[in-house]
Length: 142
Image 1 (cartoon, rainbow, N blue to C red):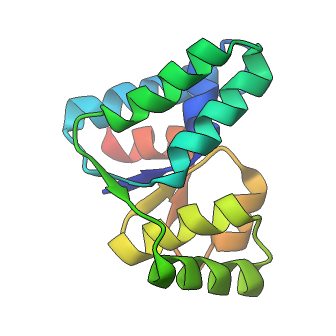
Image 2: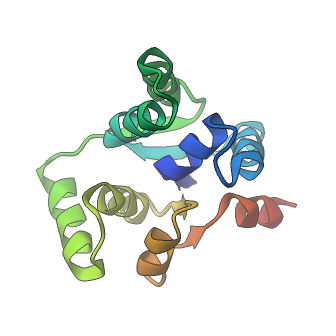
Image 3: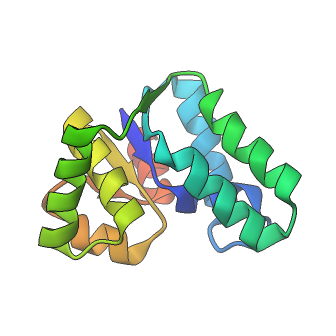
């Protein structure tokens, strides 16, 4: 089971993003392995916003966000009062940005591995959830 941070989806979509090839290979690997993907509902917004900022193409950004929901094996987790409280706790304890705390809380609640290209998120979550890069996930699967 994995929770995929927006940084991975953005890198897989934007060819000049650092980690583009690894992110694409990782997503292909997740699909091929039939992995269960646990995503916070907020991911759709975060991914669409980041792609729109990077590409300037709002229609494409909306499509990328919507496609996230269509991934085989995706389970979307709503941000209800309990999950918001859990994310707030992680945000305050680990000094995380709001969206990062929601991703971390989702991974923690589901026992998922958090896959990210965000070095700050990875370092701050280490020891709380298992965090790997797309390349590390691919190496583990080999």
